Length: 185
Image (cartoon, rainbow, N blue to C red; front, side):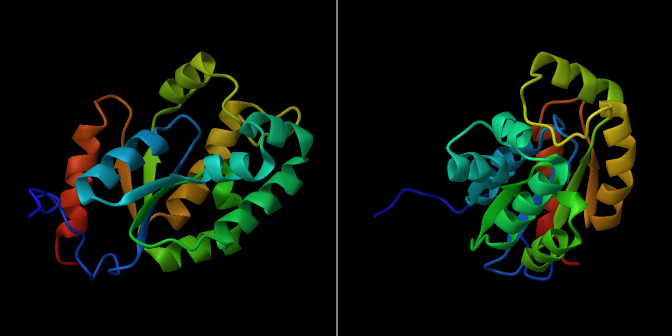
Protein backbone atom coordinates (compact mmCIF):
# COMPACT_ATOMS: atom_id res chain seq x y z
CA UNK A 1 0.00 0.00 0.00
CA UNK A 2 1.40 3.39 -1.02
CA UNK A 3 1.77 6.24 1.42
CA UNK A 4 1.75 8.79 -1.39
CA UNK A 5 -0.89 11.47 -1.18
CA UNK A 6 -2.52 13.23 -4.09
CA UNK A 7 -0.76 16.34 -5.37
CA UNK A 8 -1.89 19.48 -3.55
CA UNK A 9 -3.23 21.00 -6.79
CA UNK A 10 -4.79 19.54 -9.90
CA UNK A 11 -5.44 21.72 -12.94
CA UNK A 12 -9.10 22.17 -13.85
CA UNK A 13 -9.87 20.30 -17.10
CA UNK A 14 -11.37 23.53 -18.44
CA UNK A 15 -7.93 25.15 -18.23
CA UNK A 16 -5.63 22.20 -18.94
CA UNK A 17 -6.67 19.00 -20.71
CA UNK A 18 -5.97 15.85 -18.65
CA UNK A 19 -3.00 15.01 -20.90
CA UNK A 20 -2.07 18.63 -21.60
CA UNK A 21 0.96 20.70 -20.72
CA UNK A 22 1.61 24.10 -19.14
CA UNK A 23 4.26 26.30 -20.73
CA UNK A 24 6.35 29.12 -19.26
CA UNK A 25 7.58 31.89 -21.54
CA UNK A 26 9.58 34.98 -20.70
CA UNK A 27 12.86 36.75 -21.05
CA UNK A 28 16.13 34.95 -20.41
CA UNK A 29 16.83 35.00 -16.65
CA UNK A 30 13.16 35.54 -15.77
CA UNK A 31 13.08 32.28 -13.81
CA UNK A 32 11.13 30.04 -16.19
CA UNK A 33 13.04 26.91 -15.17
CA UNK A 34 12.79 27.60 -11.43
CA UNK A 35 9.08 28.37 -11.67
CA UNK A 36 8.50 25.39 -13.96
CA UNK A 37 10.21 22.96 -11.60
CA UNK A 38 8.27 24.31 -8.62
CA UNK A 39 4.91 24.13 -10.42
CA UNK A 40 5.68 20.59 -11.63
CA UNK A 41 6.32 19.52 -8.03
CA UNK A 42 3.01 21.01 -6.88
CA UNK A 43 1.14 19.24 -9.68
CA UNK A 44 3.18 16.02 -9.43
CA UNK A 45 3.98 16.37 -13.13
CA UNK A 46 7.20 16.16 -15.12
CA UNK A 47 9.22 19.27 -15.94
CA UNK A 48 11.16 19.77 -19.17
CA UNK A 49 13.41 22.69 -20.04
CA UNK A 50 13.40 22.98 -23.83
CA UNK A 51 16.88 24.56 -23.81
CA UNK A 52 18.12 21.27 -22.34
CA UNK A 53 16.47 19.37 -25.21
CA UNK A 54 18.44 21.52 -27.67
CA UNK A 55 21.67 20.95 -25.71
CA UNK A 56 21.04 17.20 -25.73
CA UNK A 57 20.36 17.18 -29.48
CA UNK A 58 23.60 19.04 -30.25
CA UNK A 59 25.71 17.60 -27.44
CA UNK A 60 26.82 21.13 -26.61
CA UNK A 61 26.00 24.02 -24.30
CA UNK A 62 23.19 26.25 -25.54
CA UNK A 63 25.48 29.28 -25.95
CA UNK A 64 27.79 27.22 -28.19
CA UNK A 65 24.80 26.17 -30.30
CA UNK A 66 23.59 29.78 -30.52
CA UNK A 67 27.10 30.96 -31.49
CA UNK A 68 27.38 28.31 -34.23
CA UNK A 69 24.13 29.34 -35.93
CA UNK A 70 22.82 32.63 -37.21
CA UNK A 71 19.97 34.07 -35.16
CA UNK A 72 17.43 33.01 -37.82
CA UNK A 73 18.88 29.48 -38.03
CA UNK A 74 18.73 29.17 -34.26
CA UNK A 75 15.11 30.36 -34.14
CA UNK A 76 14.09 27.92 -36.88
CA UNK A 77 15.84 25.03 -35.10
CA UNK A 78 14.26 25.97 -31.76
CA UNK A 79 10.81 26.09 -33.38
CA UNK A 80 11.35 22.66 -34.92
CA UNK A 81 12.36 21.18 -31.56
CA UNK A 82 9.27 22.70 -29.90
CA UNK A 83 6.90 21.45 -32.61
CA UNK A 84 8.19 17.89 -32.19
CA UNK A 85 7.54 17.71 -28.46
CA UNK A 86 5.31 14.76 -27.64
CA UNK A 87 4.71 15.05 -23.90
CA UNK A 88 1.76 14.78 -21.54
CA UNK A 89 1.15 16.23 -18.07
CA UNK A 90 4.33 18.22 -18.29
CA UNK A 91 5.39 21.72 -17.32
CA UNK A 92 7.58 23.18 -20.07
CA UNK A 93 10.12 25.95 -19.56
CA UNK A 94 11.04 27.41 -22.94
CA UNK A 95 13.89 29.51 -24.21
CA UNK A 96 13.19 33.23 -24.23
CA UNK A 97 13.29 33.34 -28.03
CA UNK A 98 10.51 30.78 -28.62
CA UNK A 99 8.01 33.61 -29.24
CA UNK A 100 9.72 34.59 -32.51
CA UNK A 101 8.14 31.66 -34.34
CA UNK A 102 4.34 31.77 -34.57
CA UNK A 103 4.12 28.06 -35.47
CA UNK A 104 5.90 27.09 -32.26
CA UNK A 105 3.58 29.27 -30.20
CA UNK A 106 0.48 27.81 -31.86
CA UNK A 107 1.78 24.34 -31.03
CA UNK A 108 2.40 25.26 -27.38
CA UNK A 109 -1.03 26.92 -27.11
CA UNK A 110 -2.62 23.69 -28.33
CA UNK A 111 -0.92 21.83 -25.45
CA UNK A 112 -2.37 24.11 -22.78
CA UNK A 113 -1.99 27.46 -21.04
CA UNK A 114 1.02 29.67 -21.68
CA UNK A 115 2.29 31.49 -18.60
CA UNK A 116 4.35 34.65 -19.11
CA UNK A 117 6.84 35.49 -16.37
CA UNK A 118 7.12 39.27 -16.56
CA UNK A 119 10.23 40.37 -14.69
CA UNK A 120 11.48 43.99 -14.62
CA UNK A 121 14.44 44.78 -16.88
CA UNK A 122 16.85 45.75 -14.04
CA UNK A 123 16.42 42.29 -12.47
CA UNK A 124 16.93 40.60 -15.86
CA UNK A 125 20.12 42.61 -16.46
CA UNK A 126 21.49 41.77 -13.01
CA UNK A 127 20.76 38.03 -13.43
CA UNK A 128 22.29 37.88 -16.91
CA UNK A 129 25.39 39.67 -15.61
CA UNK A 130 25.75 36.92 -12.99
CA UNK A 131 25.50 34.19 -15.65
CA UNK A 132 26.51 35.68 -19.02
CA UNK A 133 26.89 32.29 -20.75
CA UNK A 134 23.20 31.40 -20.52
CA UNK A 135 22.63 31.17 -24.30
CA UNK A 136 20.92 34.23 -25.74
CA UNK A 137 19.60 34.35 -29.30
CA UNK A 138 20.76 37.89 -29.97
CA UNK A 139 21.73 39.56 -33.23
CA UNK A 140 25.09 41.31 -33.58
CA UNK A 141 24.79 44.86 -32.25
CA UNK A 142 21.54 44.15 -30.41
CA UNK A 143 21.42 44.87 -26.66
CA UNK A 144 19.60 42.99 -23.93
CA UNK A 145 17.43 46.09 -23.52
CA UNK A 146 16.53 45.88 -27.24
CA UNK A 147 15.61 42.21 -26.83
CA UNK A 148 13.56 42.91 -23.71
CA UNK A 149 11.50 45.63 -25.41
CA UNK A 150 11.06 43.63 -28.62
CA UNK A 151 10.02 40.41 -26.87
CA UNK A 152 7.77 41.97 -24.23
CA UNK A 153 5.04 42.57 -26.81
CA UNK A 154 5.32 38.99 -28.12
CA UNK A 155 5.14 37.52 -24.61
CA UNK A 156 1.99 39.55 -23.94
CA UNK A 157 0.51 38.49 -27.28
CA UNK A 158 0.88 34.75 -26.65
CA UNK A 159 0.30 34.55 -22.89
CA UNK A 160 -2.79 32.96 -21.41
CA UNK A 161 -1.80 34.27 -17.98
CA UNK A 162 0.90 36.70 -16.80
CA UNK A 163 2.78 36.61 -13.53
CA UNK A 164 4.63 39.75 -12.45
CA UNK A 165 7.64 38.10 -10.82
CA UNK A 166 11.20 38.74 -9.82
CA UNK A 167 11.22 40.21 -6.32
CA UNK A 168 9.94 37.36 -4.10
CA UNK A 169 10.77 33.66 -3.73
CA UNK A 170 9.48 31.39 -6.51
CA UNK A 171 6.87 29.70 -4.28
CA UNK A 172 5.11 33.04 -3.73
CA UNK A 173 4.32 33.17 -7.44
CA UNK A 174 3.80 29.48 -8.17
CA UNK A 175 1.26 28.67 -5.44
CA UNK A 176 -1.22 31.35 -6.63
CA UNK A 177 -0.66 30.11 -10.20
CA UNK A 178 -1.44 26.53 -9.15
CA UNK A 179 -4.61 27.76 -7.43
CA UNK A 180 -5.59 29.72 -10.56
CA UNK A 181 -5.04 26.61 -12.71
CA UNK A 182 -7.23 24.55 -10.37
CA UNK A 183 -10.13 27.05 -10.43
CA UNK A 184 -13.06 26.59 -12.75
CA UNK A 185 -12.73 28.89 -15.78
